[in-house]
Structure formats: structure tokens, C-alpha cells
Length: 161
Image 1 (tube, rainbow, N blue to C red):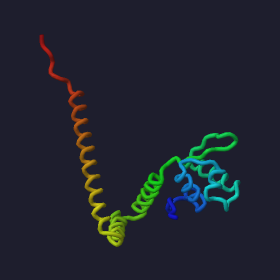
Image 2 (cartoon, helix red, strand yellow):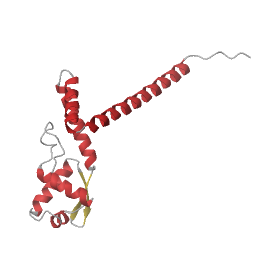
Image 3 (cartoon, helix red, strand yellow):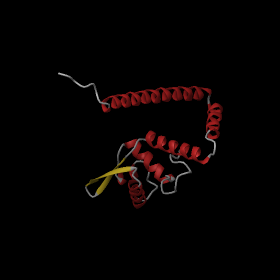
């Protein structure tokens, strides 16, 4: 089981093993009550333990819940990919903020990708090129908008009759 949140976050925002386990169960089922999770692989846990843990995940903003009779039905607020993306983004931001030279963490990233798989380096290059094109298009659009706004603010030629 891979933990979703990284070690740089405060402990209140990290997922513990039990929270991760229950969130995995909810991703698999899409939604569930405490009883359904207990029947579906959590038989080793007490009802109140599961209920308290789901409530904690709800309060962290990771679950939604709706009343179903006398119980709550819980569902993940985010997909697994969305949470992993957020965790990775926060980890990279903190690494870049912690280093006086932002090229240092980037060089570590390139080294790690190269150790894992050369294809990852190609994937990184593709992502960087795509982001550069996107930023270039955005900058071009902003430049055109500024030019249009400047054209409107200048007085136009006076009409004569």
C-alpha cells in the first residue's frame, strides 16, 4: 500500500495506514456505509473505529457524506489521481522552496527518473515542451488583449460632418 500524502505535510493532513485503507475501500466501492466497509474487508476493525476514521476523513475534506437512514454513506471527494497529483505538487513546491538553487532539486529529479526508466526522461521532455507551448499561447493571448485594450483607451479619429 502506497501512502498518498508526503512526509513534508503537517500530521493533520497526512493519511495514516487506517485512513488510507478505508479510502482505498471507498475508491473501490465508490461509496459505502460503515457497515458495508466492515462487511467488505474490514472485519478485523470495530464499528466505532471505522466510523471515527471516516468522520476524520470527512472533516479533512477528503470525503462527502449523506444521511442514509440512521447512518451516513461516505464517498471520496477526490479521485486517487487527484490526491496523488496534489501531494506530488506540494512535495515539489516544498523542495524548490527549501533549496537556494532551484536547479538542485530539478537535477535530483532528472537523476531519479534516469535511474528508474529512460522513457521517463522522454516523458518529462514531452511534458516540458507541452507546458512551454501552453505558456507561450497564454502569453500571446494576454499580449493581444493588452493591445486591444490600449487601442480602445486611445481616442479614435474625430468624425467630421
